[in-house]
Length: 412
Image 1 (spheres, rainbow, N blue to C red):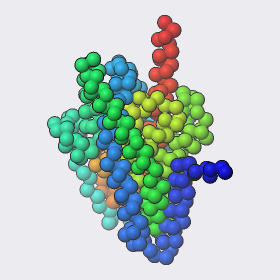
Image 2: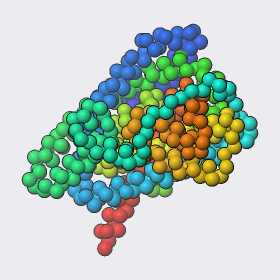
Image 3: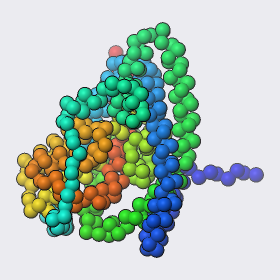
Image 4: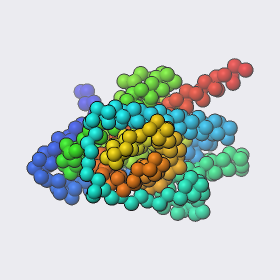
């Protein structure tokens, strides 16, 4: 008697997503939004809490294990440089896509001009790039773990990984401990990931049931513009780079990346999606050591989705302020958004802080953010999905570049 084939995780997540939308729409039209918030969303919160619970150990041990497996600090540096350059270049391209689309929508008169009299928003304090640079280096290791400060956790992993490599044979016990802990964390991670369909279903039901009215509201075209940008960037930049360097067809790339994309879309957290992203990168053939390094770094500094959102929001808010952006101002938006993507990394509410910085750079009142802050979660779903897709594409590309470099070295 043949065993019934178990549905794959991507298929389970896709079914959960569709079911969540259907249930959410029913609850929205039946005015049961409170039911989804009180009885469905808590199960999604439990799942996200479990993911957050394992994120710090996953990042810490996967990065240290990845560094030890590379067995060479030069290779760690090489991977790091390629990763940061990939993220900076794709972020600049994302800004261009966002600005072009926003200007097309604006020229066609598709952006609504909203009443700005009630707009209010107070930007969180941002001390500048140097202040952020100082805060990256932890003064208390345990505090970095307890607050889940991912940039600090990455720095701790880099220091410990480098120190264990430098210590040589004397650090064999540390190597064994890291390897053993990482094996345990991987098992735990697989169990938590298996619960993903529950998290996707409950969160999607809640979002559709409570945000349905605003999707159909006056900001629908601004949302549409941002989402066209997200889709174009994913197809033109990520799937193209995965095809050109990783030899993956766009269809295969998106099929294998879909579990992480769907979960990022519903959870709006790149860090919480890390375990799922790692599984997807492994399926694509990304080197495990490189993926262990690239993905945690990407979840912290790769903000292509946020860059597109900023550019669309900036043009829209300029329209509301009665301004027309000049070419120099658009260049300023691209430069500010690209640099801010790393400058605000790890700061709570980074997307809004980055938008505030961009608006200040071209003299648009920051208070205007209040016009779109109510639907920020809807923008956030798409931009987080795009960011996570970029992290996975980067791990595939860097794997290929490092393999090519190794092959060239072997020929000499």
